[in-house]
Image (cartoon, rainbow, N blue to C red; front, side, top):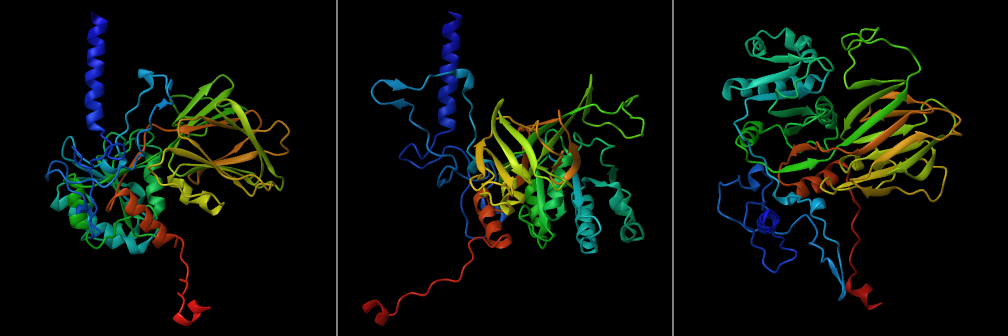
Length: 441
């Protein structure tokens, strides 16, 4: 009797789930029962309506492919395993909402950039005085003489909450993040949160700005819409990286502080081993460092050796990172909604070593080859650079904590606009058409 009740509950859950994730690609109708995105002619945050604020509207097409048919010919079918079923929301319908109104915001500003002082002050005044929000800033930002010596900004500055990187944990105190600068500010925001990341709104005030879709001219209305929960989201997957090192120097730890006085954050000590963990938004880069020899590293996938990289190094990147260092090394560019990990060699000494894309759920492991002539070096989003020796290992898989990036319009339009504006993708002088006389020949 209990098993029948469980089956009945399972069937009801599956039925409700199927109605909730009804795919227009697999059915003739395109009507969508829940709120989703819609295209608009003007490039605005309000291009997609807020949840529950408008009537049902037509959704063009799912960003997922069509649901595959799992019967193959007259007798074969897919083995059903309920424990492995995973429902993923259509990325086209991913929208921001708040369980409670946001009260605290972290403002990240590009350091040592005088052009950002005025936008930073305007934004902070708007957040504190107009929206009565608690503003968190990094302590070294307020040490800038242009801010420290500004008497008019003093009353606002006194309301700030400050923190220091690697010393203060603010992960449970921030409701959302605003970045002022370039792509580096978004990478820095990611590094501050080794677990769940608050929504990130990035303003383009840097040099490239591939990941920063917002312009600062109309920041008041744009920030207000985000606070009201009226925005589309793109979930940028991150890499969960674990570095295991053999202990070669004896260090004593007392109350979490080593002999040299450095606080040991995200570090675990085992007998003879040191373990460090990182959350990476763009890429993990393993290279030959200052050595003149080729790097010689083994790459394992789910415990199986798949290749040995002989060259300048190898890049393991997320779809977000595929448009960064990986693109410069000849890799394909992957939309951030595609669940994947890209492996790209750096100047391989081989004519047949091409970049490859593997499923997001695999676990990669990189180690020095036993016959490697030199050590290797690894960095994570360009930071925390360290040496990798024989016996050390780097384990990489997709993290369960993505970075929720707020879209200006929607995930597809924002990505292609960045490709066109920042990387000038497929820019070419157009070919002229034939004249009447030329067509006759």
